[in-house]
Amino acid sequence: MLNKNTYFCILILFISVSICLQCENPKNTEIFKNFAIKDTASISKFRISNTEGDEILITRDNSSRTWMIAGSDFKASQPSVDLLMETFYRIRVKQDVPKSAFNTVINRLSVRHKKVDIFLDRNLPYKSWYIGSPTQDHTGTYMLLELDDEKGEKPYITYKPGMYGTLDVRFFTDWKAWRSPRIFSYKNPKSVQKITTNFYQNRKETFTISNSNNNVVLLNFKNEKIKKYDSSQVKHYLTHFNNISYNKIMFENQNIMDSIFNSDPFISFNLLDVDNQSTYVDFWRIKDENAPNGWDAEYGYIRVNNNNELLRAQYFNWEILFKPLSFFTR
Image (cartoon, rainbow, N blue to C red; front, side, top):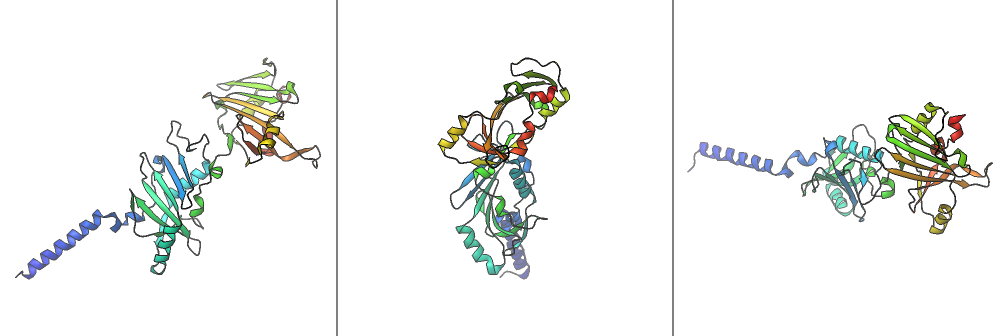
């Protein structure tokens, strides 16, 4: 028979083996509570999908490290990206799901959820979040974590410290909402190599600014150099191309769009940047019979790079660019 010391040794060995097995099995550790991504700078892309079959992939796995909507030429909305990066970094587990609600939460997650796959520099997700519904008090969100294709057994109530509300609304798949509305976003005027502003109703007000190392040259509509002009105002004009956006993607029928596109715009802009990337924009005023001057004072229509797409623009955002040649030469 085994003596008490032997039994004690066997018991210690059994406990040790059990602890080791638990350490080797991530489902028995705290690892599936660690939703956060500490190094968000290493994130190369993320994919958002839902149980209705919608999906979008946002990636910066490109030479310029610019966030793009995968499968398109459209940049992703930087504020939306920044909001998710903050969420990836700051998310925390608020508490376990109460036992009384556990089965209900699991069942609801299996039927309806959003999934967020977060990638580093590899093709497989580093972490995947299954995002369920908000808690009844709307101060937390039911979520479950997956690591390397191994799904956690328990969902948790997550939140972002300092934020009142739920996290699920931050994750959406609508490409129109993800698309960056920026048309011109040159924070440094030195990035603008040349800009031509064309006034269709008054050609003599058309001008071109050539910019090289902040040395500007102003030319008229005949491409002739202007000798006397306010160079400080010309340089200041280039700073206006830093935050120019559209307001809405219009879904007019093709006949309406063709009618607009075949008419002369009010003004057009042809910008060439230092990377030799060109952006061409036509701007049309919108007729309004009730307005004093016959034109809508709030909105206009724009077309970018001759695409078959009509965009609406807020007049106050664009009118700063509507300076004629005489503005610089008076």
